[in-house]
Image 1 (tube, one colour):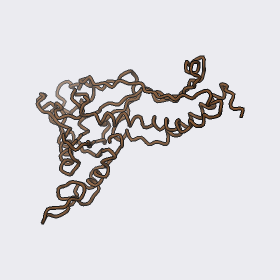
Image 2 (cartoon, one colour):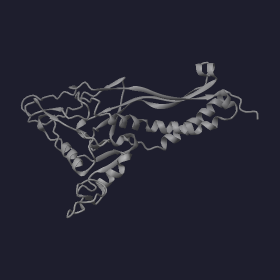
Image 3 (tube, helix red, strand yellow):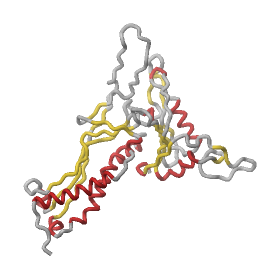
Image 4 (cartoon, one colour):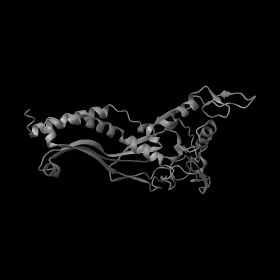
Length: 318
């Protein structure tokens, strides 16, 4: 078999083929990061979010306006550059074997589509050890809040400790500002290096390079819109977490009116969460999963939390 004579037009055609496969796979994936995060375009190496936590309140207009500063906090998200590269040997193109790489480029497209999920949920998992705009960990027991006189005398919690061996999250994603942020500086782009005069890999290793790179990062939005629990997922703990979110106030004691609408778990807890929220009846102790009741105690009670919140499961939180 004569094989392929490598010319610039042949390399361009191969690149276009790989690019089509990459983009087709990219468009076929439905990422979920935007269920919990807001998308923010970035125009610099880092984006400042000093306005987080500054929730202006109305006052009677007496005298001059009181200007609410939006730079009270120094929180910023620094963009990072991410890349992945695939090398194809010259001999594989000469021998018409480059079609063997099609599944790899399809998987590359899928990976790019899901990379924001990996960033956002990966950061959410570390929220109990990673600081947010107020200097406390995103999930913490002592977020400072000013009282009616403007003094920090109140400390709020959005974290429930426990030893369940897994974490679950309540989120309010109904607002313009979300609990998480996905920041994009430069979108991911599929590129190639196939010219020996421009690529050392072609010259030194006889290898053509195809890859993807982009600049982005994930960060925390408002901690008030998220609650993390390490306690067992049952009715008692679910209601305690929800009550804590509902009771949160802004500075000066103004109610925030938070109502969690999303129960987020790993796929390893999906059945447990579904039982808790979707079942018509629960065991008398309020835990999902039927247990043998004590003599004379009803086996089940009405589940008044049925369908009160959306259950969302993702493998990134397993």
